[in-house]
Length: 186
Image (cartoon, rainbow, N blue to C red):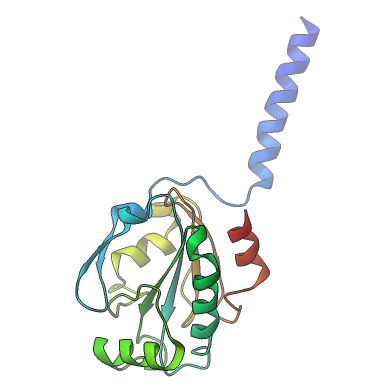
């Protein structure tokens, strides 16, 4: 009887300790529920990315972080055959650094950085007008993992193969930073 009580205490202690140590919550919904428009105006269904890791980035053509397009494209080329998809969402909410049309943005990204990863239509990523996908990315109540706010252009969100939010990386961190590359190598 004493061994059973001790076992129960140990199991409960381990559960409490695990809950205390784990800083993130448990995923409650998937990104696969969303559909958005591509930069060319076509419907893009995130359910088509089941089984792939997704890196979502809000982008801008006239930002100090714009050269990150080069490293994003290099990361995409390196890992696209290992089930990575990078998805760019142009946004003009930070310093009016993405004022162009979809045609302008696509041309800029292709001409200057050879971008081949999927780019979506320009969206808002914060505030009352934030796109539904960004409301999900930034709200713990919606994604079940963490709440965040998009601070600037080129903030990166990591989504696992099941469509669940894993973590995010600040704008100033390079797309090939340790946090992202370790996640990709898992």
